[in-house]
Image (tube, rainbow, N blue to C red; front, side, top):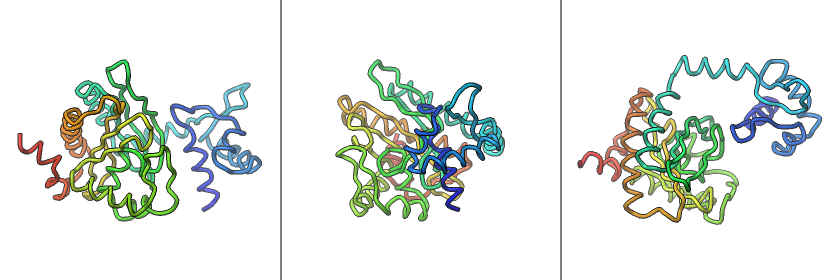
Length: 264
C-alpha cells in the first residue's frame, strides 16, 4: 500500500501549472528519496502513466492517463457540463470561476474560466489540495460525507497564509456556520489577496460531490458583490447537481442561500 501511495503522490504532482518535472524536482516535492523515485518512474513509464519526450530528462503524463480520463467521462460525462456552467458564471460575475470534485480526501479542480476583468485571480487546473483552505474545499467540508469531513478536520493542517484556519476545533465551528448559510467563504485563507466563495454540488447520496466557486481580489469584494455571487453560484450548483443526478439535502434547501433563490 505504501508503494501505491507513493506512486499516486508522484502522479498528483503533474498539473496544468507543472506539466513537466525532472527527477530531482519530483523527489524534492514528494519527499521520496531519489533512488526510489527513479524506480517508480521507470515502472510508471513502462505502463504509460508517465513518459519522457525524446532527448529530455524530464517527465510528463503518459497516454494511459488519457485513456483513463476518457473512460471516466464515458461513464459519467460531467466535465463538459461543469465547464459550461463555469463559463457562464465567469461572464455573470466577471470573476474567475471554477468547479472542483472530491477526489479521495482532496479536492481536484476540473473546470476553470478566467474572469473578464483585467485584474483577476488565477486558478490552476487539475490542482489537488487539502480542503481546509479553499472555498470549494470548505463547501465540501460543510456538506461532505462523514469520512471526508473527519479526515479533513484531523491531523496537522498546513497554513497557506496567516489567515488559514488550522485548528481542528475552530475549523469545525467555521464549517458549521457555512453549512447553516449554504455557502463557504475562504477569506484570504489560501491566497492572502483573494476571497473565494463556494457552493456545494451534491451527488446521488445527498453529500457534497464537489463545489463551484468564484475567486475575487480581496480589495474589490463588498457585501453586495458577495451576495450577488452567492446567488449566481447557488443557481449554477443546483444545475450541476441535476447534471450529476444528485439529491439536494433538506438542510441545504433550508439554508439562507437557498432561501434567497426561492424567495425571488
